[in-house]
Length: 333
Image (cartoon, rainbow, N blue to C red; front, side, top):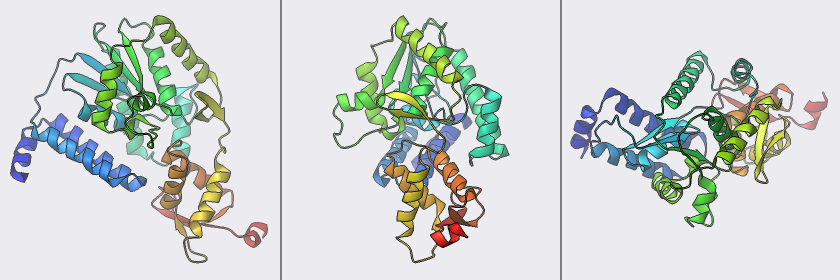
């Protein structure tokens, strides 16, 4: 089997090889960043291997274009959908940071979010620009499928895309993966917050159910106008609550994060430092993924700077430092 897989990999183009490698590493990174079920990660990686084994031929013609709000979602769609479907994935986090000005947004992300070193910032901008160029080149006769789910980022993202496509002639199908997942009764206990939470083969079923329901002109215009309203707001944090996008203060989850850190610290010996990644993983699970880990790390780091924690290490990423909650005597010193 390994020899056949090696032969198939040798036959891949450089672009396809990079795509599958990135997707596999992305899944492994998800496993280490947060406590996702290992069975789901392993199954998705096995799907990638199966796809490579099938020796897919490169395509230049597409019957449908899918637009996804993250590269993780795009990767799942590429695995789950047919080969004549093109997927455009954007790398963004529209739930955090300023939206009113691209330069202000880039500066805020660079100053506050820890994933941005010089090389990643360049890659971030390059990939967003590349995805936008692909968006602009969509032929007018090809239908577009825009994916969203019940979280602030994807809800804002699909409004942004619809504003970008406001003058296009393409039919646009908007699929809320969270809602359709429940309509298809895949599981009564699992609550997918993000499209990327759903297995690729299930995304295919969701697409088949919704593919023939394009948005009306009025619905497209309304969502496009809502992007303009969101863009003018001066908030730095947005959440999805009660079926709508809500602006909240930047320190909205700080107290919950502090209480979570105290609970995690109780699992350790007295005066023991706790890895930032452990606290963030616990908090991410507690909040059911409603906030991305990059933002949680930023708020934990902010609480460190505000004097709520003693710091050990250099906070250049959540894996590089540990914290310990200060006691009352230290806080009053």
